[in-house]
Length: 64
Image 1 (cartoon, rainbow, N blue to C red):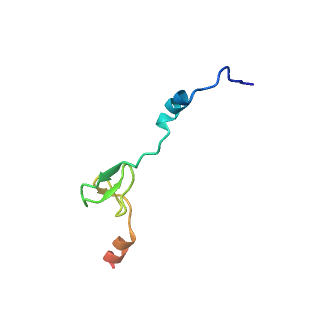
Image 2: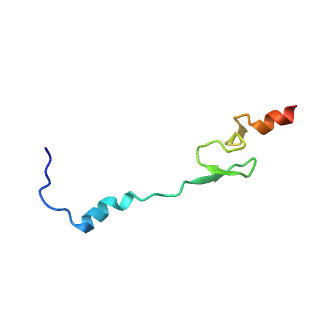
Image 3: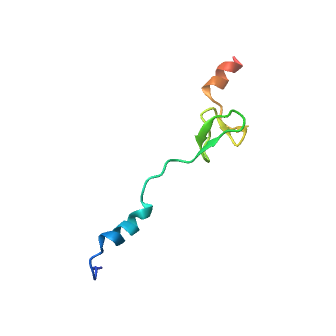
């Protein structure tokens, strides 16, 4: 069983935890619609990298 040899100081504990903080998600702007969405995710309008990849409810209503 692992047993620590010496007590870790608050400074070293803080250094270890330095990268644990939460960051805000990175956002991108869709080139075709100008919509803001998370990187590498499909926008709410169904676009990804300038192409329509998902049919949305609004699209179905427009076709009728």
